[in-house]
Image (cartoon, rainbow, N blue to C red; front, side, top):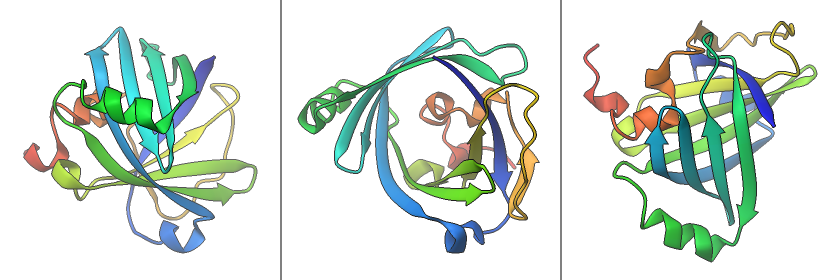
Length: 157
């Protein structure tokens, strides 16, 4: 139940041509405390409830618990969420033995594209696709729970 992942910005839309799957995701947060977040998600036609714990100092790993719930339950719970629902399309891209999940954000986070790769251990090596940009692992402003409160379109760049 420990999630180990690295997170990157994406420097082009070339990943779309390599995608093996894409899914629309709508998610909200019942709790965004940094020690634990509680997320409700509609992923296509499926609902999920997820609890994530505090990240390690390097941002590489944290506790994650997730359960599938009925779509109707997820829709009801989304109405109870804190302000700032996340709307995105997730693309899955296979790169050798890893799957990269690339999120293209819409709404108040339009223009932001983030890639994540889950690993089996912290020092695991992986191939980096050409469209992978700057690493942002551990930078909390790129966490979805923070993007719901401080959307990308409001950042000073």
